[in-house]
Image 1 (cartoon, rainbow, N blue to C red):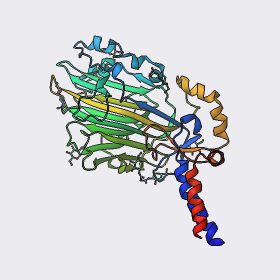
Image 2: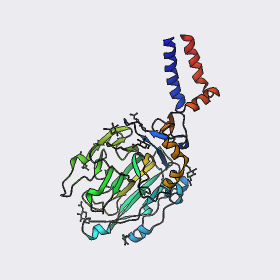
Image 3: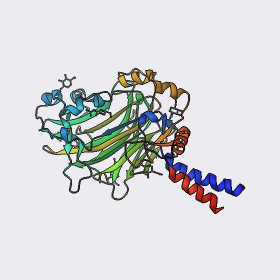
Image 4: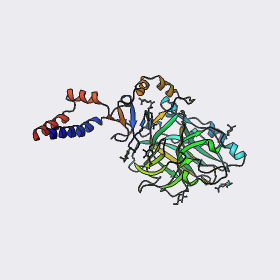
Length: 383
Ligand SMILES: *[C@@H]1O[C@H](CO)[C@@H](O)[C@H](O)[C@H]1NC(C)=O
Ligand SMILES: *[C@@H]1O[C@H](CO)[C@@H](O)[C@H](O)[C@H]1NC(C)=O
Ligand SMILES: *[C@@H]1O[C@H](CO)[C@@H](O)[C@H](O)[C@H]1NC(C)=O
Ligand SMILES: *[C@@H]1O[C@H](CO)[C@@H](O)[C@H](O)[C@H]1NC(C)=O
Ligand SMILES: *[C@@H]1O[C@H](CO)[C@@H](O)[C@H](O)[C@H]1NC(C)=O
Ligand SMILES: *[C@@H]1O[C@H](CO)[C@@H](O)[C@H](O)[C@H]1NC(C)=O
Ligand SMILES: *[C@@H]1O[C@H](CO)[C@@H](O)[C@H](O)[C@H]1NC(C)=O
């Protein structure tokens, strides 16, 4: 009898798990667990899919004049839709202050014209389209690309992009969290976890950092940064999943699911923004791009699970909406329906991991999963 119930419970667990890994939409998830070793929950999930946007695909001609470049329009309606504008802000700022003061050698101007949806012309393409962030060098300046989260209230997250970097040396492409409580020069007020690809570096080297990476005296802080080696076949010129998990104890980075770096030193503590960019300023870090050259960060999708704190001044409309939504009430009661974005067969669509007791019994009563019953009966007879 003991054996029977043991076997039954094993069969139930195994089949239950299979049956449970049902693809659901985010409204059915109270929280998300990731598959690193952390047991921390995240409350929110966002997915941006650039893989099938042929209606928006168009490579815009570069703009030579830096002022026109800064003033340029968004390159397609995709970037004017609320789905995008509620979450991301395309940047137009430049570093003329730094150039004027002699801190940086080359004028950098961010332009909406450098962020666009492009048709995937790869041989045997893995998507129809992707998002491109372009940075190109003119004689007198570097045209660059950056989008920042509208919300500054991300407070721990797991962010992933399926991306590659291609093009000329002398650029940096990056995915990072950012917070700066002081002025631009107040080093110690910066909190930041970075993934940075320097296009001058070998394609199997990626730099991961919890900023600042040097101190006020200008010395390097070696514990703050790691020069990591990519898995074979996943150098930064190849499409791969770049993932950064920012937790209270450490920031840990993965490529295609393999951990490549982890830094427990100087982990950002406070709510932050999420930023993507492709840039150069002719400095030591980025290097100088040759006039007429360009480099590109190309992204098929971005996925984030995160917590956000409300005690942060933010212009994020979605956060306000969320604060009012019933989801929040549920959240306070704890997490009933736990979902995963890792164990899903469909990137971007979560699966239910647990807490679906009512759902399973619904299925069983409705014979929705007869395949649970048949092996169960078999198991019973076998004993
Ligand atoms: C990072 O910290 C989390 C807890 O926040 C822990 O579960 C995980 O093991 C740590 N990762 C590494 C690589 O130390
Ligand atoms: C995210 O928020 C939930 C609910 O407040 C909390 O249980 C969880 O520990 C938080 N996760 C992290 C990584 O701080
Ligand atoms: C750079 O930014 C400054 C300050 O916002 C602005 O006055 C200037 O016109 C900008 N320059 C370019 C080339 O966009
Ligand atoms: C905005 O997102 C919603 C929900 O994912 C989707 O149904 C809708 O088609 C999107 N709008 C555009 C213009 O892509
Ligand atoms: C990382 O190491 C490689 C050599 O293994 C070197 O070429 C590259 O410049 C280093 N990157 C940084 C940012 O130090
Ligand atoms: C975690 O999930 C990712 C997909 O998001 C996968 O590539 C990776 O192999 C998984 N890691 C483990 C340890 O299961
Ligand atoms: C890049 O070129 C500028 C001159 O245009 C020069 O001032 C600067 O030092 C160069 N940067 C590097 C890293 O060599």
